[in-house]
Length: 224
Image (tube, rainbow, N blue to C red; front, side, top):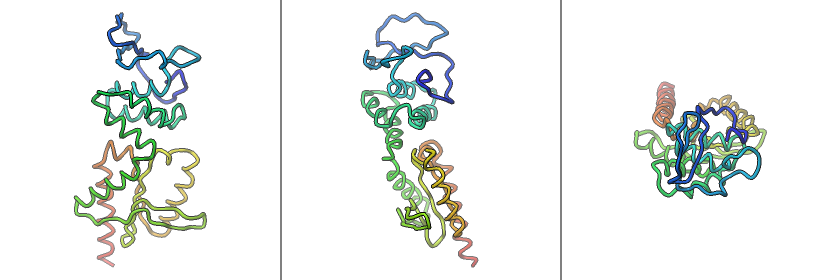
């Protein structure tokens, strides 16, 4: 992946994939991994001999030292335009048995933005479990730049939760997102951002923040 242009991702050793059962000479310089899914078609067609990015990313996620690093490498590959989420999904379908198979599918689903609606459902369910008020979903708002939708909104409390898929981190969306958030804040709404990656890695911390915002809004309303 690094040879294909992946930035801000470091490895201690060059990783080499070989077919399952291959005779391997161990060395400290290389991290040699056997895989049942090895195929000649996995190789890049030009340049330094290496595995295609989508294949390498899926393998890197499976062999990562933590779930967090597994999700990070998949996200970085898509963010940097080295492979599409659809290409990662195609390679992930080749994985039949692995402890991270479900994590692969969930993360790639998020990268395809298919996890965004599911994220709204998950958040609403967890808030209900905590005894907090239910939000309205996909609420239409307008400003001078046009129409947009709020993912989760508590109109009586002035609290907004925006669930950010991978597309929110792309350069062309950052400015628009910031302008919308600023517009809401100027109108008195509290805006919290919940990245899908955060929902997978640290859900409790984000739920606590949402709960705190709702509780504070209820207290302000009661004191008014």
